Length: 165
Image 1 (cartoon, rainbow, N blue to C red):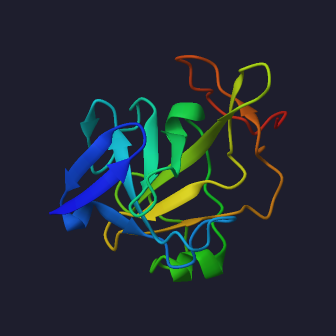
Image 2 (image 1 turned 45 degrees about the vertical axis):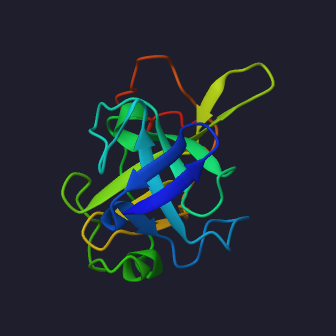
Image 3 (image 1 turned 180 degrees about the vertical axis):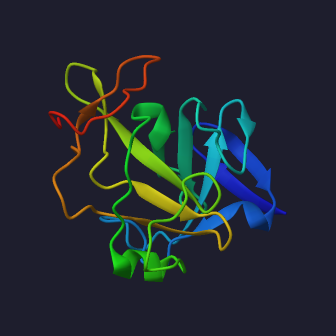
């Protein structure tokens, strides 16, 4: 078992298999290579499509924890556009986009602006390979989605293709 110290959830005992490895870290946190997913009040290996807010907690730095939603909870019609080099880094087929339900979990990081309005980063989601437990932040090369997509309480948008934020 792995003991993970967290700022918000105390010390958690987790199976080694619950850790996702980020070989390149995350932008601005390149030294952080291991994260676990936490769904309050219980731990889960893979949030469901309609799961509530989840937390991406550093396995080594208790103060580093990101709030996130499964991408489908923010935009049910979200279309993946993961670059070939990111697919390769994740150990996925570079000839096609992976399946959101069986191959990868995709998370949108959430932030609050100065007016306490929540936004989700759909431009650079966190992509987790469910088989290899490898992850990265995949920055899109198009401008279809925004890094400040408004999050409406309890409502997932059907599609943001028209009028991207």
